Length: 433
Ligand code: ATP
Ligand code: MG
Image (cartoon, rainbow, N blue to C red; front, side):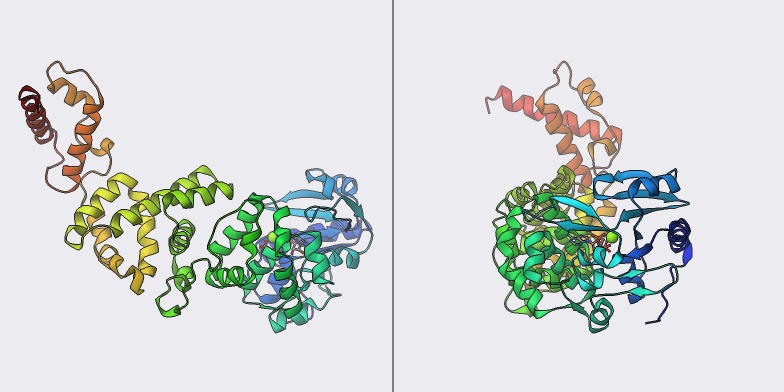
């Protein structure tokens, strides 16, 4: 690690410009938080936060195009070239009476005071325009030792804001930090405090863990701390969170190899023994988007459909599954299965991993839209019948046969088949079947 930390490149340049302009106007100004941590680690910096002694009104005056995004908390957003920078006035947070949010925000003049309110030592460092590191809590030492430690008294800090316990797990997993023993002990002891946290914020943290660099490690830490037992709304997840005791057969250590976040969630839910309906309840409790819940429900639905299929009918099951749950779901499931099929409990999935993409590619129609005839065509051929549920059922049946390769996706052939089925059903009606 170098002694002078430089923020360079497009986003870094813009940050430097803001810090310099604040300094020229007589204010203290620093890069803070995650960008300092990531710069020290040599990681790509995702976003730049700047802290300053300037009050929000002064920042707005200096940067006329700044947007007052969080004035109550002292935050304004400055768009500069292709990036946006959050500039927040130094503040101390006093009196968390509810374990959630500070009761009032007090603006202060010194950067050390601002760093003191931050959660972990590695997140509580600042860098000035001269590249000098401000590190009152030994963040750099902890970074070098790969140690995640609370700033100050961990019990107090988790008591102020219970979300920090989940953040602790997230950062430990994401960066491979070892939990500082005392901090970790207090996170476990403080777990019931999580009941004060809004479920969408819990989901926000969980989703970053699942999508992150080492979701399996996050799950192990969550299981060990039993944090998820204490959420405001009961999630009803098993305490061991699906982690198998005999590790060799557990697909969850392979989660990081699943490229799709939703597929990761689906695999985790399945491993915890949640079916589509139970997973849907968990999504509702976590306040996920409807699209997220829908994707999970479909992926687990397809999973159950395929798991129950006899091996001899693998191709048929795959194709009917793709029609029922959609091609996107099939591809998402493949992402999950590619990692899981190497383990014994998911060994059955291997036949789909190998052949599924090919079977998908061979389908000459995947949706009713892709079918070479429409409902109107069938009606015209149906001699006086009125539209009704039968029409949809007939189109579905044509689609299934076409997708399975039993009928060509051609207008005349499909119409001929439709006429045969209609005549058959007329015959059945006549015979009173
Ligand atoms: P990421 O790369 O995940 O964005 P980050 O460190 O930038 O990591 P943010 O959630 O963006 O994390 O927060 C920015 C900074 O604000 C943190 O580095 C930390 O200093 C501080 N911070 C954020 N949330 C909290 C909190 N709940 N309690 C105390 N400090 C916090
Ligand atoms: Mg950030």
